[in-house]
Image 1 (spheres, rainbow, N blue to C red):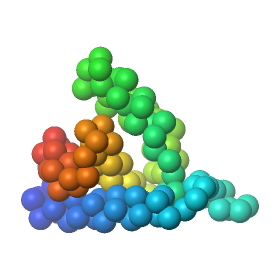
Image 2 (image 1 turned 90 degrees about the vertical axis):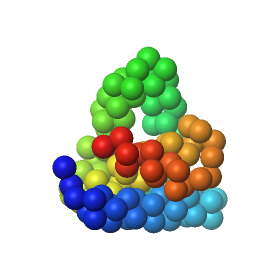
Image 3 (image 1 turned 120 degrees about the horizontal axis):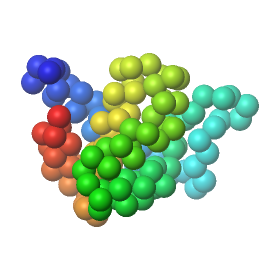
Amino acid sequence: MASPNKQQKRAHRAKAKAKQNRTQRAVASKPDAFAGDDSRIDLESVDLTELFVEMRTAGEISQQALCTAFLAHPLLALVLEQEGEEEATDFILAALIEYRQWATDTEDEAASQALVISQD
């Protein structure tokens, strides 16, 4: 298990990344996951709504089903492949925080972050 300091740093990066994602999606009129002919995915413009709907549906079955739906999504494998382990970890934390906010329809990022981090 990571030290509390390292968990705090990860949580801070995830919070910053989630805020950046929300801001950029609000500004962009049409999110485009791919930039031109670049085959790399643009994580800041990825629309996670489809994934969140799958997670909510699976969550009605069980917490384990929700986790399985999240971890089995092809986007996570793509992020890990393209960005590496550290960036994938940041993306996962940011996505989970954003999911918690989406699922509870709240803007309280600190509370969502606390719930995600405390479930480690």
